[in-house]
Image (tube, rainbow, N blue to C red; front, side):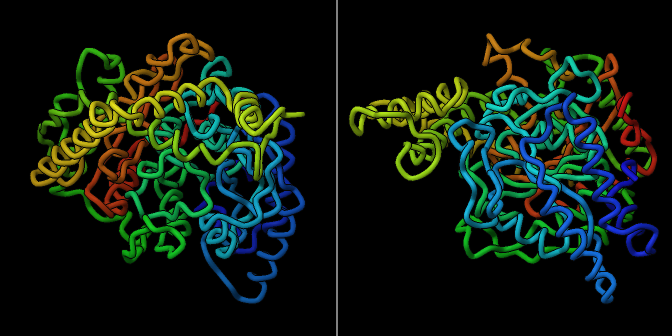
Length: 483
């Protein structure tokens, strides 16, 4: 059962080959047995899962149907879930039980999805390795000595290890796509505003976006269908109709114009990954796609711009965690200032503190124009580059990451080295574009991803290309040894 995709589970449940309750029990037992190796879960929700599974079976018995009805998933631990710990991977929120469900959680529950638990993550979604979590590092199931990527590494490791078929995740600068690449999964960051951020604990509000992590593009289409849609509770949510993502999966790629930016193939890209990307291009050409070189001249400025904007927004968003209303509070404070200082100093880890300080500096008097304002201008230039490219091509293709997953601890003493691993992913967040990573091969036994980017609200096109590619390749079917 654990090897089934979401689509296969939907068919099995519809054909009464097994019940949601039976499947849920199998996966909960598997998580209990195997997750100690991975540390991919922060909380297991056995009682809730079995209750939801029984309810889903009853709904099916009454004639209801639906691809997510009775399907087991997990939520990244920054989606608020009523009455269940929502920690954001931080000591600061270790004791926080959300009083309400995030919109994404509520929508998937209404569709009948079964929540198995909450997955581990970099603290407050800040990181590319899933090593900054208060609950310890997550291990990559392809090699337990390597990182699974971040910040959605818990969701990625759990799905890659076949502990469950799919999970929710979030992407601020590549935190869905990079873990997908590192663990041989398909991960989709939707257009900014396509998925509600209400009830999703914020890192950088203008960059954060929720999306699906699964083994196939078909499964991502199913999960995104349940997540997407306008939400009046979220002022950044876009009131745009949600298409049937599964309906367009089998559209022909004949004549599809794929742009390959020349800037992607620089000295920083592992040549073995470059070769796998070229192989992917050849596969898509066989399916009828037309390849064209394009240029993204401002890509070189994206990382410095991102690492001004994101920390600036984080310093503002995280100011609410002060030890007064909720979250960690220091013991026996001498006065209000002591309460603030010690609660935040004890509650936040080193990476979060680093980014808060960088952001506060960038927003301070005398530096706002020099750093934050200039970064926002670069952001506009990055967006303009994409708009110009999309006048010539339908999608853009390139590597998801410049290197395969590194060893645990390898970049801990050099945060900037980890930041540079986001070079291919952060541009989509700065511009608000949808992006997808799909499996493209292996380097030294570690998975490699190819990234697809599309114009706004063209998630269906990305899923279509990835699905057609997966019908003609088998990278996405490979399973890590021991799982």
